[in-house]
Image 1 (cartoon, rainbow, N blue to C red):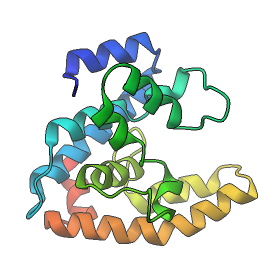
Image 2 (image 1 turned 120 degrees about the vertical axis):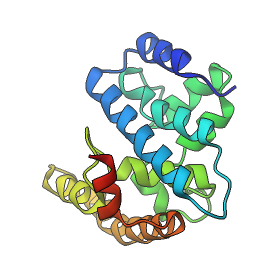
Image 3 (image 1 turned 120 degrees about the horizontal axis):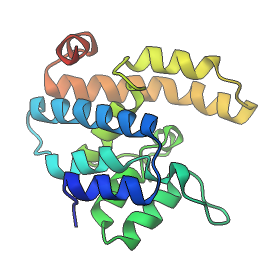
Image 4 (image 1 turned 180 degrees about the vertical axis):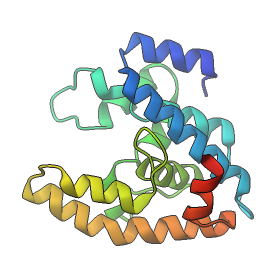
Length: 177
């Protein structure tokens, strides 16, 4: 099942998604949909993409089981809710997933969600600014290495996806203001 907006907001309430994360998810959804509508050549399931964007951080206030990390808990919960397609899209959105060619974002919906999320905080800020913010955070050595290794791959994916949409990040920023 791919949920409608009312169902998504019910899940936000049930799983206590904080207000700042709701804003982030809504912004990611808006960015993702705009990119999807401009994408040429590949059919994007916009309903699936937007539902996935709205639910990609659903696990932020859910207790994790042993061994779970973000978004494993969200994937588990969404599967329990009967939303396997959404779970599969959000599974690949964490930054480290772009480093794994076998399990990283493959479908157009996974790729657009990945990029839209990485270009967004509460507002759309662009990929470089988002990475700059991450670099100011107190991270352990492994997290810093993941951040550094992910950056060129994220830039390449952004350029590929936005190229397919026929728009630059700067133009997208202007459209979203």
